[in-house]
Length: 175
Image 1: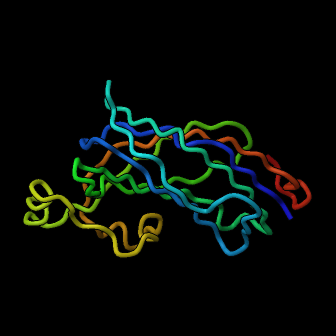
Image 2: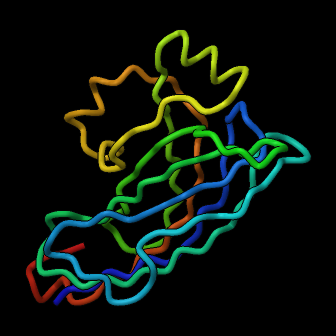
């Protein structure tokens, strides 16, 4: 079987209006992919930027996959949350990006968005917190339902990923 090893980190995020940010992340693959080592999802620590607007997480990602085909190439889905002084969490943005398909080190910038909601929900979010969230996390990376949503832009999550590919030449894949 061909193998893909993803080693890197979620560097941090910029451009969010909220402070005290953290990120929940996960990896989604097709049926032909098997996770050999690593964890499929995780969460960073909370960071409150002191200077500038960059929240630094430097959260490691180390995944090793085996695959029988290219269909269902890994996608990284992200949820950025903010935490207030009372420990309450509210959604700051959803995002996803495809794991690069060429070996080497890659710098990725993943834009995020969040559901806008009605004017009442927007008003409640401003004063009470909370706000609309997706019922199903797979809507983040499945285009059919996502394009019907009314959304607003969030910030950008910065990632650094290194890829090692092994045995793809045995299956006629050149890189």
